[in-house]
Image 1 (cartoon, rainbow over the protein chains, first blue to last red):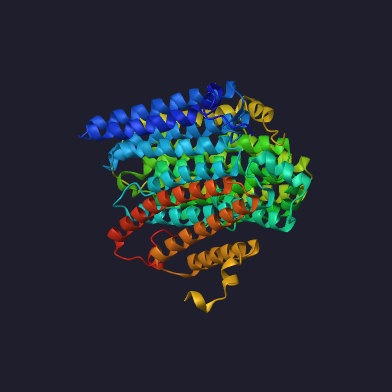
Image 2: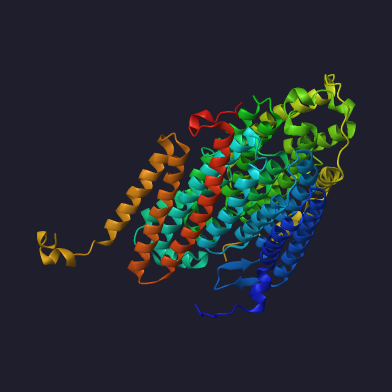
Length: 486
Length: 112
């Protein structure tokens, strides 16, 4: 390891998205202090959106300068660029969606966007981490900001509880991850992914302890991706958090936690993957089944989407279990597609829920097709995509995942996974039935959809449909960078 | 006090597994406390205990290898734990203001 005190310019460019997000976040925090009245604060959300746009540009710059940075602690490759773009995309949608939401809830302040930018910086760092300690730092930067975002509406009891549960269980999980990292460090003498791989090939003092350490790390990751049996926090957190934040949490941090899990397991612990496969197999099946069957009994839309996000984590785990380049590409495609369609669904919930998020049960969806036909139609697109109906992104997502599972000869898991998606259709279709076949009981006037929310809904719906017709747009890129263990 | 022990006692060094077993015990106590105690502050302290067990492991291995990187990692962990404590206590305070209780079992607004 040649120690250079000052990093080279190329190294800084590979770290550009995080630099932009951190500086922008800090500046906005200062700017917020100068904006005393509520009205002038809308400029902060605009600036936050611009900074996320700049960070996307930074991602492209980082992608054009592939390679390692800071003594091999970070790696800028296509895989990192892909997930950075996914989380930044989700972040941009969150900004668009939140502005009107926060005004409606009378909590419009700049900190929300600052925390969002810091959380995104952590997630971008995770996507590029090539070192277990960097994974930990990225994870914590992202999580600590999200804990606050989940309880952002301070007087809301649901938000408080959601924030507390997210914080306690999230930190608990991180401690497991970290204990695993400490033992990997002890057994291999390094936390760099490539060096761990080399050390494992050469032989380590105790393979049992390495397996135990990987088990501990798996517990940490399973919490973050809400995989069974560590999924209990997800429905509570998604139900209690503000709707735009729930969408953010279910799409961004989850996608990037999967990215880290795939990178760590395939790069550093490639030799252990055959041993891990049965564990992941059971975990994938349990996650899908628990998520889908629990979602069937939910009356609260946000909670139902929470359970559905557990089920979808199960599908992605199927792709991770297959441990192949096609599996990784399928997981990447699915996470991007899921981010779009699920965020869209949460954007609709944000609108329909109304002030104080009072209207979040299935009964409140009655007759939505008559009251707000466009909103009902858009929600239909998202729900059909979540089911996996052809011509939507969800169909190709599931198709590639189960194809990769069959390629890896996991026929049982494929069959059980497909059965699971059939079960899932029940609770998504139930919402459609309520929307289209029941008369509305509400006589309140229909609220106009605010501009940012409208853009979010239409944009995510358009993406869902475009990816459903031309999956190659994303899949080709994913396939190109799905090989990690080099 | 000094004369109670023979001089050789102070030259003894605890072997490597001793520290690792201690850190494992601390970690287990943390996990058990997290799972079985019902007060939010105690549960939060359990997490800190787990992180400190991790620090002990890092420092032990660092000393064993004769490299400093493990000790630097433990600094990272401390910094993050401090940030986490700041945010965590703020969240606990916010919950307490709204509900006037710190018992985990009372936080049951969110359910099926």
